[in-house]
View 1 (tube, helix red, strand yellow):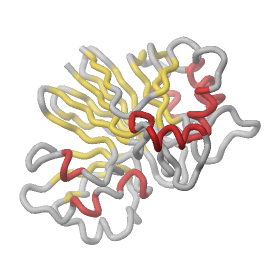
View 2: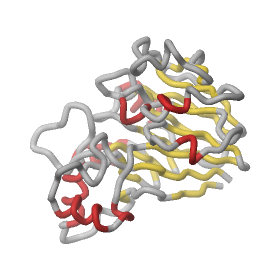
View 3: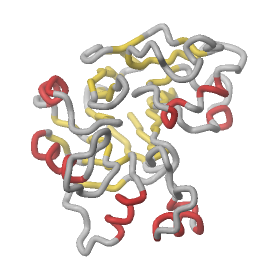
View 4: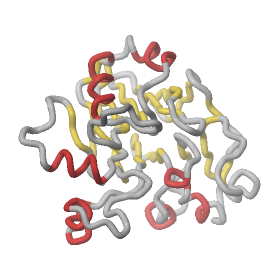
Length: 253
């Protein structure tokens, strides 16, 4: 059994956005279940945990000593890596952090890494085995070197693709022959008149649904404008599109 938990489903501003008085942010201020933390996820297999991105700032509380041995980074923007600034000063066994080739990293993490081991870098098409899962790195379109990941346990295939706007040709080609049980995809914005620069809007996600084969498209990295657009739709999102929420889980055989 392979389980995926979406620990955070928000963008860099999170929800509620500081100082915002829109319906979505006011609702999230009042009711905690509507809040969105920085985008991150947790893959679990037979009690083993693989953290995907480390933007949460309470990692030491969530993962007691010895329970977290590997972290997959999509990239090194602050909202996806800021939790490591504290975690690195821990004591005990090292934690391996796998991610894209990015010599800048974030702040001084690579220079003063503490218990974090950044020695293994990944590029598009690289495969890494974790437990019974083959993890394949896939290039994304973003302002910093960024990877998405395909998880394949032999029975189910799940892709986690954020942060990106559209997908590079090589990634589309790789996924063209893959039937995904779930695709967790960046969808920061409602439909825009002009394609955004760094993150998908819903128009782009709908396009990707026509060129990729998947049972379910789970929308994450949600901004408050996207949340508000969905809240005011007269009809539900089209079939197989699901707006993620913090704590959402999916289980795969």
